[in-house]
Image 1: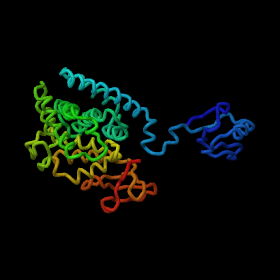
Image 2: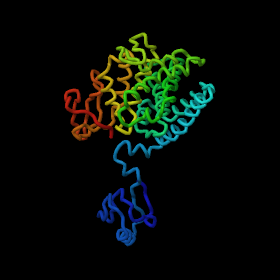
Image 3: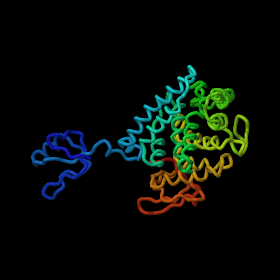
Image 4: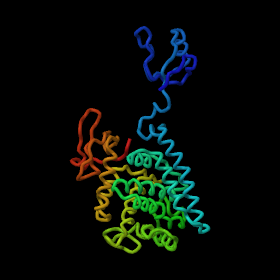
Length: 350
């Protein structure tokens, strides 16, 4: 809200506070000004009034975030760095030009400067509207950012953390060679289209196998869709045969995919994503996944969610046995343990 001199008040503005004359409220807050009201304020010699700004009409966290200077800076930097990242990749794919590591880290460092906490990055990524024409590059850039956060959470040494970030930038490079209309098709893929998409790890490995980059990066490219129970592709590898960096990237890739909106669905909330992980724990390295799930869950404390019955709650405490079903609190200080109410589920963040 802002205070505005009477002579600058205009029809259509909405009062943010009551206008009180000699102890009497002559116009309550939320009154929409019109010429008659403005003339009366002049007769009463009202000097100024408090009116609402655009941000004051925002009701959800997502709406308010788009007036947040930190988020707006993140959004601007993300668009700039997405262009930088795409150019580096296109130069390599089109002419074989080497991808300088220092350029990739410059992109990462520039993005890291736009948020203070890991929970803030998760929030910003969740509420970022992706460029529909750059979804594949957007996915990889976001994966690299999340890789840095995950590495910090598990206290990776700096060199290992940097290596995981590079894996995030490289691992889906094979998709850059596939038709966009197939990768991001809004309808169900045909068997032939799905078979083509599943080739991207092999296509990617062919692109990077002779590059002077760490073997873990190459392994992340070829193995990021392998699963611990052998149900992944392209080689149905199991357990420790899968590179440890590829195991991390498998979780990062899955998280970013679910947290991103698509033409056929909204983005899953972080707690919905945890629920999906909980339903397929044996596909991932649980020793690596569980600590990450705890951090993701803790980052949601204080957020506002809506349930499938329409009720609105604040995330109060994360349940350590079922991260996706926390203890909730409402505005009346009533509590609801989702772990005891399986008929209820979180449908969106507010």
